[in-house]
Image (cartoon, rainbow, N blue to C red):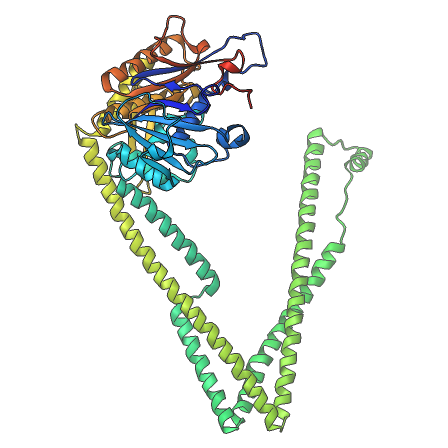
Length: 596
């Protein structure tokens, strides 16, 4: 699949661009060297990449210039002629205003002009956006990247200025989105992507369960021992209490309740009151000590006065003694400050504890008063009301325990599910390891071909040693590496620089295209820039290499550059230069209109 022609319904503003099947150059010329207000990087080279993406049915985005400046482009209708791998052609018609209505026409001749073709003469008219993508995917028939669609291959064949920061990860994938691109890269390199994808999906599922378990555990609380067993025991005891109270209500006999009230009064309430009174006494005692400590002022000591006193006694203090003593005083001062802060904090904590204890004592005394009143009461109906109230409270507690048991069952099920997924993940990790070993040992694998092509590119163009490699990390995922290596085949930091990173991205894209020369794969590469910051010799070697690829492997290569980045000894043929842009007026821009 290659780009054949791009044109519009406004040829005076956007002139048709006809691409050849091999090496294509889009040049931006700097003609106004002395005009500092002109920017040679705003001629439209990068906008063309956005336009091509739009033609290949990229979803509408307000960041795309067509929609960011909608009022300027709403009347445009664009036509994208594509050469299929079977040597036939299709043309996609897509307007800016009605960008979700797509038209497609099949044809056998190149460089057609369908701007005046009526709607009924299109093979497919007013297709919905999703149907158009499905149909285009079937026409392009890139079986080598299945189950991914052509849009994924487009991402790596259409690199704009923001996509040269990493060889494998494009900007649009961002951080934390490994599932969206790493399995695809693994597939392109020849590994079993289904296992890679499953491993990421299982990790996501396990993490979700872990988060859910944490939420459930917060809701149920923490228990010492088995939470289910403890909750079942608590439920059994509460049910017994409820049954006893219900029997008393049914028999209208509250002797057992009187006994229970006495037991609670003597064992529970009085015991807790006694203990809290001891605690309150302890807190008050400690507060008194802390407040006395706060009231004491630290002893001050004046070195000068001491020194004068010793002089009068005929004793001289040396400088070292004075210095050491002053340091000791400074240390004492800091300790005093820290001690004061500690005392304040301790006082505050104890005062808060005292408030809590006093509040609880007030509650217990109220309960005690209520129990005493109950015991001395002879009114059966009052006791009936008390028993009913207690039964209602116990039933509420029973319902709360049942709710916690339900949560406990959910926790048990989630833990079981997590163990099952973890076991599956371990199996997948082992499959990834076995598959990687198999690919590594194969002499005919795609991976080996890509590695060799990349190494050759780095050696021929940059005169350095380069390599692509993979490793399996602790999570079992494949990690991809590419760059320069030293004599011991260790990666160096030299390839981290901006200029080398860009040229290595270009080398990787070319290496992949070479490896897939005999497969149903995308057949064009669009690189927006790439010669910047390279020295002349490397530019010459790169252009020589890039020009040879179409002839040797049938890849369509499209390169954009600024004429000032071009070595003097390089000239392009008229067939190679498909578009020339310049900074001398609107006529030199991609869209021949005032800049926006």
